[in-house]
Length: 409
Ligand SMILES: Cc1cc2nc3c(=O)[nH]c(=O)nc-3n(C[C@H](O)[C@H](O)[C@H](O)COP(=O)(O)OP(=O)(O)OC[C@H]3O[C@@H](n4cnc5c(N)ncnc54)[C@H](O)[C@@H]3O)c2cc1C
Image 1: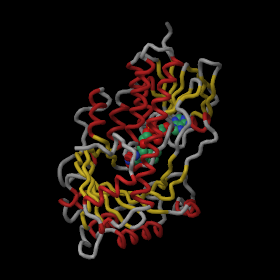
Image 2 (image 1 turned 30 degrees about the vertical axis):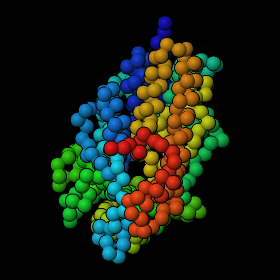
Image 3 (image 1 turned 90 degrees about the vertical axis):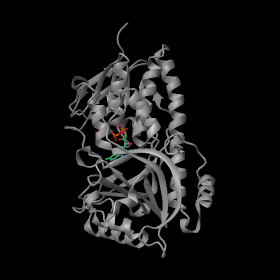
Image 4 (image 1 turned 180 degrees about the vertical axis):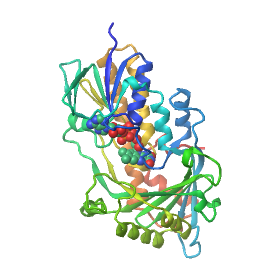
């Protein structure tokens, strides 16, 4: 029997994971990545559920010793007059997360894909089905390639998703994530950030602050980075102006480090000073070249059409509160590999996989939306609640269970 040929569009987290899992299952894969060089670190840190992460270590998708920092709680904090420096601790919500650098995860995956299967500077400009048993990708240089199956792992603004479902659009959530980081040695006192993630609520949003490994992925105290992000509401009508950089160029989706107009950055820092306990406002103040992402979400009607399927952010796209970003795409590919190797015919395998991923990932989008409602759109004054009150409030709004951020101790 001929080896099934699989084309993968996008060579980031989901694309590399697809290449590893499908190659190990004996399929003939080709990754088309439009970037020229190694993908850069996309922002400093990510928090991933430790239990989930261990399954990827067990599958040898990532090294067992990948540098990470354990976080055992989500501390919910609110500034009060009495607690203006560190804030009032409303609730230490249990968590079991590993904080690591996006770049370390990417490099772990990329190192497991042979260069001969990973083609750089290959911009896919179109794709379409080829009869009932194949799909064709068209590249910017005019060449085409035909496969038995094409996996679109081309990120949140996916060409694959818009080709399969032109009617589906990303929905802007009404807020952005303003981000930055500083070296640990710039902190007056590191103790306030040890052993967990600090979630600092304020009217109309919240900020997340936590340690990630420092440059070179070092873990030593004193050498780590403080990774932070503050959710801020920006009405849809003002988004285009917000996403316009200091040279006047308008960006879609994200405003890269170093491009934010100084006035915008100063206004965000001033708002943080008004809203956050001073310890956290000091961190945002000291951060150079802060950057921002617009927050979107989108459910998809299916993960498969004919011989084209979606993976990672190219499929259902959840708000970052769900903590699912990177690992969701990896789970998509582990389960696609298992389905294709199950012995079922390819169309039957794809149909089973489609049902599983569409259900699971659309559920994650809804979970992210519930968290967004609780933590940004309708965030109550946490200083009026104790731990029991916080738990009651949270469970009344966040009703969907997820293995990602709801990991229990
Ligand atoms: C700029 C950026 C910064 C991020 N920062 C963080 C962060 O700090 N923390 C966090 O938790 N999550 C972050 N995320 C989200 C997280 O990285 C994603 O959830 C995760 O990377 C999803 O992986 P993915 O492989 O599905 O998509 P992506 O990582 O977005 O990768 C898509 C890949 O497809 C390639 N591509 C796109 N279109 C084409 C095409 N037509 N032809 C060929 N190649 C194509 C792109 O170059 C890219 O390499 C970030 C995402 C982005 C895009």
